[in-house]
Length: 384
Image (cartoon, rainbow, N blue to C red; front, top):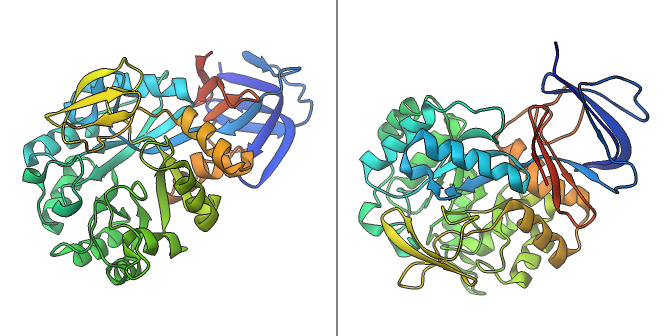
């Protein structure tokens, strides 16, 4: 028997439209969208009198850990626990993000992801985001300097084979030796080159964009800042229309008005909301490990002993609320920033929209943007 689900009497929100309607799902795909669908389904969700909004499921392109686990743990348990915990915040897909570590540690993490297969109750692991080790020592942040190395196309080819072609994004500082050549090679491999942990000049960023950079990793953080005589990485990526920029909207990594500035300059079509979360997400304040470093997590965020920010404990649910609060953006714009833009960057042809024939990956929100239900592959995997 086919797995069927009917969602009725909800406001359906895509990045380009909002309308009241019903959605009929069959075997994980959207079969029909209309008003007052009179079909029978195995499962039924009725939003009547609830003022619920149905959005494409959130996609987090930059997350290291959650629920006490980290991608660099290189265990199947870690990936399953992360994927299971993320659905609570409306996430239906994510990139498992590595960090600057020893070659052996990175390769263990890549091979571990290569073997991973999702369970039905989990957010989909959509691929790997390699953050470092090809970054600037001057803008290392929480990336351990002793493991930073120069980019190598040969090494990356080996890593891509180990991962079974699952690497989708690489954060790189283009100004390091061999950086520009490496960016060109990523473009040829159809892997997203994202500028980050970089001390590049505006001229170097412009060159990198010409060669294939199409994204910026956690805007403002660990990149050459804006100065009116040297616009730096920040100035360059804010002005480059073809570069989408990640934003950690926790108001710790960036002042609320800096987030608002990015929204004003890039527009919703130029922003990708991410969490950059580490293993402490969803847990109590205290000390946690990040790549062999002790991170102290408090109400002020996640910091190393030297005061450097070390990821976040942000949820996508809260990122969406924060973005809405500071910019007063529309729900259509929220969809763009939380799902559609990421799906476009990752070339996911059946995600990021609620349309017939697409994957049934949704988040159901109340009027305060609280996650009420998360639906992955046509199945309710989280209910408040």
